[in-house]
Amino acid sequence: MAAMAAASGTYGLVIGGREEPGNRGETRGVLNPATNVPFAQVAVADADDARRAMEAADAAFRQSGWAADDGARRAKALLSLARLLEEREEAFARLETENMGKTLREARVDIGFVVRTLEYIAGLADKIQGETIPVPGSRFDYTVREPLGVTVHIAPWNYPLLLAMRSVAPALAAGNAVVLKPASLTPLTAIAIARLAHDAGIPDGILNVVNGPGGAIGEALVRDPRCRSVSFTGSSEVGLRIAEIAAGRLLPVTLELGGKSPVLVFPDADLDRATRGIALGIFGNAGQMCWAASRLAVHESVRDALFERLRKIAEATKLGPGTEDGVEMGPVVSRDQEARILEYIDAARQEGGKVVAGGGRASDPRLAAGNFVLPTVVADLPASSRAGREEIFGPVLSAVSFTDTDDAVRIANDTTYGLFASVWTRDLATALTVARRLEAGMVSVNEPPITFPQTPFGGFKQSGLGFEQGLHVVESYTRRKNVVVNLGAPKRRT
Ligand code: NAD
Image (tube, rainbow, N blue to C red; front, side, top):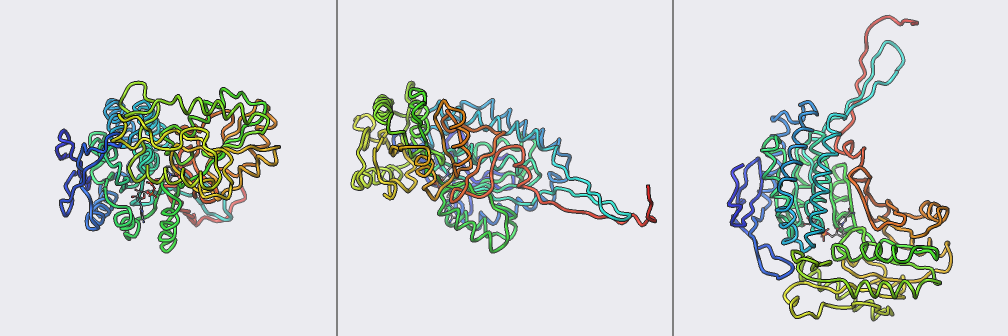
């Protein structure tokens, strides 16, 4: 690919296999959230660039042979992409850390997950098949699964490459041509992986990346007549808007949206393990996780013991730039996000919550230039309060106690969301009966939020529609066609 000067930290739009500055030549500085200093420049697309990306994808879909080829060829290309990424794992992890703020350790896990996703999905690319169906008379009936055409993928900023590629990979495996719009705050790794596509054997125009504001560019992509499906990961608010637009054209959508996920701790739980799991589930990625376990409900008999452990772990968490050794929590992604989280903490105080740990910005003067919010635990926040109900998307845990199992399940399900829930208990019957009663697309028992490329990821209620990952995900990027053939032969008995 004719790349723009990668070494100078300039990132373009990737359209039709070429990296280019975009129609208006507009660029934006990309900030490091640990310092708020720009470290790269990125091209910003306008509506005409979005249209050109859709055109390029459509042309490649029709002309490159990607869709018509044996799935094994697509599998090879995805495996090559996995290898190319793996060889550059450290560079991609550093780029993710610099751009998004997460610790290098977290970023390495993310990039490893993308490599593993590409490998897993590559294994499915030559297993997309239909069925034969017995029908009356002298007929032969079969189904085929065809790619959809141009698929649009809109990604958020909290796991920039991981969440982009978890829908892009299956769409490519099924033979589609992709247009990806990363979040404006974190577009760099998506552009960097598109630079590898040609060498991986993915035809030019099959993987396009356009960076630009969601409201203008995201909507332009979804409204483009060539768009055949939308995979959106982001807020429930924007997800609903996309669903409305897509409904007008009967476009299939996969929506991975927000959450306010409960974690239930029963009296027999291993409290030390639970404490570590709860901390990971809300302070990991500085709490910027769709499935952050942000609402703790603990049995009243172990409430004080657990709160004390949580206070200690929150206060011991080492904050700092994600690239620094020993740092356990990086900055949040932007000043705006920091302000939003701090505003929720203030609201929690006003709404009757008692701050057990944290409760504001980090006071360490060395962190003053970055967006550092302390790991925060707020106790006894009423469920009806704004901070208790709405997704904060930061390192803020709201904690209440319950009296019995029915009470715990009621608290857990008392939310408009339904992405994830976790249960901590040593009792198998409690674990399994509670898991059955939880209204969440994913439940973990004695585990913090954890997922694998082979396990489905999706939410109930306002948390989404459809799923990503798992054995059946490639089907979401195909359409089913039934073919009936009249054999014209006389009816036979045997
Ligand atoms: P966001 O909804 O603001 O933006 C997500 C993406 O949509 C970005 O690329 C943005 O530019 C684009 N966008 C914004 N407005 C648009 C519009 N009108 N039309 C088309 N595209 C538009 O979300 P965010 O702030 O980037 O991410 C945080 C949210 O994402 C949280 O709510 C979080 O829970 C959710 N999330 C969900 C999952 C999941 O798998 N369920 C994973 C990660 C994040």
